[in-house]
Image (cartoon, rainbow, N blue to C red):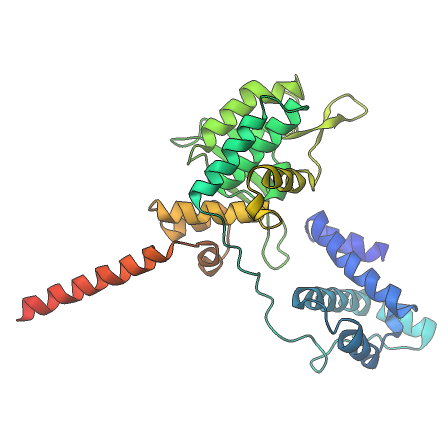
Length: 329
């Protein structure tokens, strides 16, 4: 298993992706109770047909994909060794007959209307005046606003360094996202995101008034843009934890937008950003570049516009058709 982890790390996969694969493989191994290379297709039939029968489609797909990848690793790196030791020929127990079927599309995440998001952030901003821990609350507020304004992922936000903010680039300045989500295991994908939609104002306020409460050395290489309250042995700030922003958004939702409790997440704020950019006239290609998607079809699933928008497009089309008919008559 250690060799598998190192091999996957050498491909450039993010640590979170590798942890997910290892977790899935270990859960299958814990159920099987024996070395995984002894697993037969009939064992996979039992596991996917009974144990995971009622599990979510995403869970079944992730478990099957991780198991398939692990057996590919065994086949390429250890097939000869295992055959010499055990007499077994390594073969993946997940085949075309028992592989989980169905699509693994992400569920639809329709964000709150703009007025509710505005109420959410207004309540959160008012909380800063009386909160017990001002600096962490203000940091979480600024990070959440970035997710809603330029569609950054929570994982991308926590990996940003102070030096990634490039005020001199472009008309509004840009932010260098170095750890963007890769596609199909391609590893981190970098992109430059312009500080549009008031994101520049949010960052300027945060850096000038809040960042110094965590760290006083803005010239230190690798200084995180959104640091943790905890410090390293060298007394420099640690990077924000992976679940901090999700917990902060959940707590703020419970306090300021209770009707969306359990539904408003950092990823829903990303959907809100895409929808608002589209409603404000930005074309899909520009939104795709901002969000860091590989395919325009993915971006289209992020755009949730009001029903009147579709109706208005239909009315406009009918008017154009009527004008063409009048020209012929």
